[in-house]
Length: 163
Image 1 (cartoon, rainbow, N blue to C red):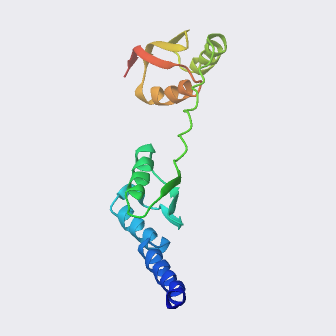
Image 2: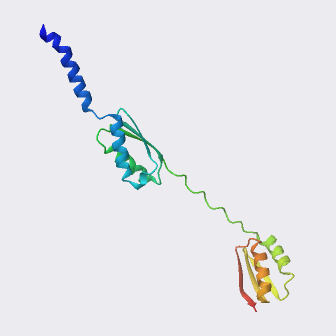
Image 3: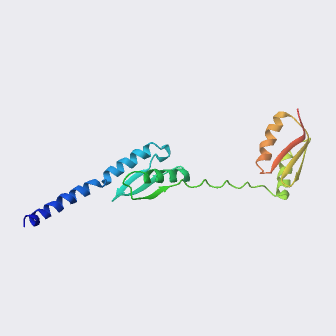
């Protein structure tokens, strides 16, 4: 009869003892955060813990950093599993396409641009403006931006003598 009275007390003591052995979520969180502080890639990563399950969130710099923070968290004592909700930065936008003027409209535009520069002849082929003739440096400094504004592939002044 005494044993029956002591049995509930023993069960209660055993339950408290075993429940005290398992790490608490707050302790796991603190240990994971401490481990992540040693990794510079984990700056800005937030940690949540619920019944030993660690959830990571925030921004990381690349896929290697994303894997590293998850691995670090998984290595902490008491962690049952890791849910990695960290976010990678979006890829950079593709470069804007270069618009190259077609030869016919470009030829007309180059002819209009060079009409006020006697002694300069221009030919257009496959988007490249090739210049020949003679021009002063001051006048070249005026003509060059005008030609560049027409969006040719390039302006080739190799045949042009600049004084």
